[in-house]
Amino acid sequence: MNAFTAKNWEEKIVSGAEGGPRVAYAHATFAYSGVLEGESILDLLLFYAGEGYESGGTTAPAFERFEGKVEGREGTFVLRHEYTFDAKGFASTFTVVPGSGTGELAGITGSGTSGGALGEDKMGYTFEYAF
Image (cartoon, rainbow, N blue to C red; front, side, top):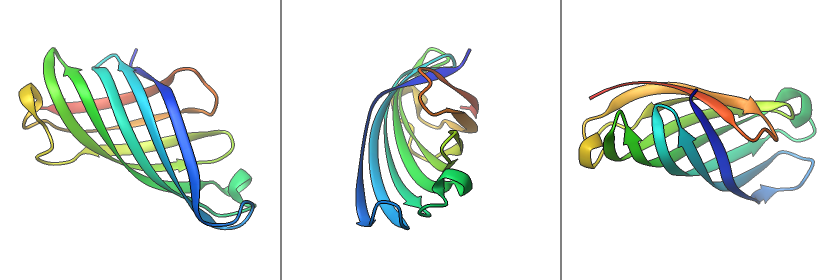
């Protein structure tokens, strides 16, 4: 099973007020198992619509730098995410940033999805890739 866990999550409001439309920044670290074996650092720019967040959700572009192994090959690469989430959970589609692979992961391309319910210990992902 492809899974990841949040090791930490730090978030702060950049502009706007709690309960109203606002922008926040989040910095997180994740641990991956499955196709991806390793850890990552993720930075998100979050938009909260305000009171409608609970029912209408929000969006967040993000970049994630993965360090570890794919198919036994070791290195790093960067993913570009587009997240949507609400009070129940989140979903993301992502792609490998072209040219971001290093080490044995140089030249990697790919895309995938991730998602889960808020508060879960483990969340799932898919990842289709090529070298």
